[in-house]
View (cartoon, helix red, strand yellow):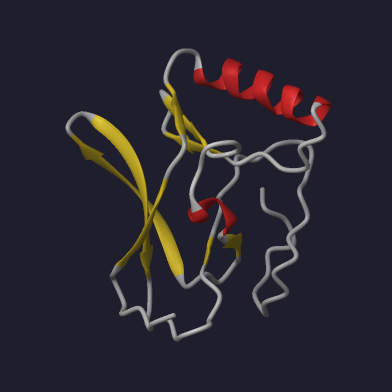
Length: 126
């Protein structure tokens, strides 16, 4: 409801930290969420040793959409030995302008279509 200046912290991506065998646990959760009928999961990788799962206990940051030409970026910061993901603005963002960032999914055989429709759209998220 108010403009955001360039290089300003927008929001922290919050959820449950998965620290023990993060990829194994994340894979199990994705399967369980699918079985439970949860349409989307909100798992954010923080390096090799941590994944933040905002699917059931996250904040509004989990709803920020992907864009190939985003107006924000995600940055991993460490506070008191705990890794956190913070979304920062790349440029000024006006009132009612959608907040976006590049998800930078890992490259896999299964491609995920990008729907951002910007001029420089990469057509896939990975």
